[in-house]
Amino acid sequence: MKRLLIVDDEPIIVDGLCELFAQRLNGEWEIHSAYDGFEALDCMKELFMDIVLADIEMPGMNGLALQAQAQARWPLCRFVFLTGYSDFDYVKTSIRQGAIDYVLKTEGDEAIVQAVDRAIREVDARFSREQLVAGAERKLAEALPLLRKECLLEALQGDASGEPRRGSRFRALKVKLEPEAPVHLALARVDDWRDDARSDTDRALYLYALQNIVEEIVGSRFNLEAVPYAKDRCAWLLQPIQGTVPPTSREEQGIALQNLFEAAQNSARQYMRLPCSFVVGTAARSWRELPDVFDRFKAMMMRGLGSGPEMLLTDRRAGETARPSPDGRAALKRLSLLEPYLESGDAVRFFALFDEIAAWHDAPQEGIEATAGALEIYYSLAAVFFSYLNKSGRFAGFAEHYGVGRMFSIQQHPSWADAMAYFREAAGYLFRHPSASEEASVDEVVLTLHGYIERHLHGDLSLHRLAEQVYLTPFYLSRLYKQKTGRSLSEHITDCRLGRAKELLVGSPLKIHEVGERIGFESASYFTRFFRKLTGLSPQQFRDLAQ
Image (cartoon, rainbow, N blue to C red; front, side, top):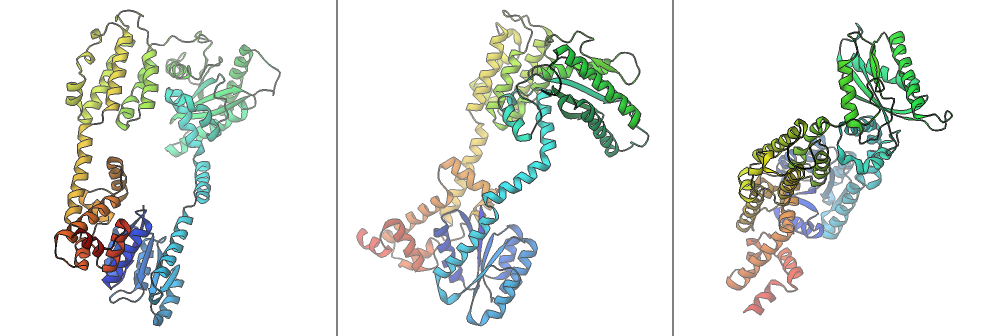
């Protein structure tokens, strides 16, 4: 939320302008006030102000001194000055310092409003859609390599929630692969670093050089994306380039890929003195198979053949061309992602991943005599739920309303499908029923605010001051309050002030201006304007009709 600070050494001017802009800006801006330059500067030490509307000539610290110190701290802050006829030397200085407008005090409220409106347009222009999009496009171009790596690493690690949007993500990130076509996988490991590769930076540079060699050699026949996944290791996802060579069989493509990586291995040794080992997938796999293939290739890299460096292994050696039979290991790797989804309330991603994990098992279709892999998945799921319930303080409430007995033992379920349905229902319960402690905390915030507002209708009820009472940031408080109550804080304050004004007008002998002061209006004219706008009557007319 953007902020306007009004500064003048005459309180009646400050209070009147605060009320004027509070009504005009309709809660879209925070309105702050200060009665001298020092108070304004103290306020700006804590909060960034988008616009400052200040008297140019004030005792102690005048507007120019305030502008200089404020813009040293917040260069983007915009100043509009109120000035008298004798202040034009000051005006010239203020404009040189970056003030965007000035208004003669004798010109009245409308001229002040127009000057602030111009300042608001300038602030809004700073964040125009075109500028933000252009800036975002520049930042995105800089971040594309990292974002591509994260996206492809998700595919290798098996985050199934990314599958429905893989195509759109690939297009946005300019990934050089088809999201539905089969893909080859290859892994590389640097077996021994050169003597001059002592630091992590040096080694990252050589790993990048290895990627360039593979890009140069293998990229002649295949579209590829590199995915570094450790300091000395890199994966490549590859698809044959269509139309560059006569159509070949899948087996011929696999042999070509093996030969190309062998050439890359030789080049790394010859030109970089960098011995590397490779595991090359000669068979193209579906994207859904990738996580399991990735795990198997990493295991092949660790086992190897013999103890020497510069291995060149393929999936053909171990009969890997057939789809591997899952043993739950890849599912277990992804399972750790479920708890963060529970914590963040991300039900869509939770259930997308859960359903894949629940289906990836080798348990029998009937009964619960599951294999070791299925048992490990079951008790790992139970650990995820217990960990979340304990950390969130929801264990007791969950146990009371839903029960946890069936979570302790897989034997409590007649079948694997029944066990997975139990966990799915448990997750659904947690997503449907927010934490009672969280709800209570929000309720306490709302009650605290309402009590403070009732007791301080005559005082400062700015969003900043209210946020201080509940130890939240103004923006977050504003959003939280509206989510909880369905209305804005300014609407609630307006209703409270109007209600108290009616009570005092009918039930007390206070004069009209005294009633206004009791609910925060220093000026009788602004109180009358406020009351008439909401009721259609002046305060005196309302009092007369009520008697």
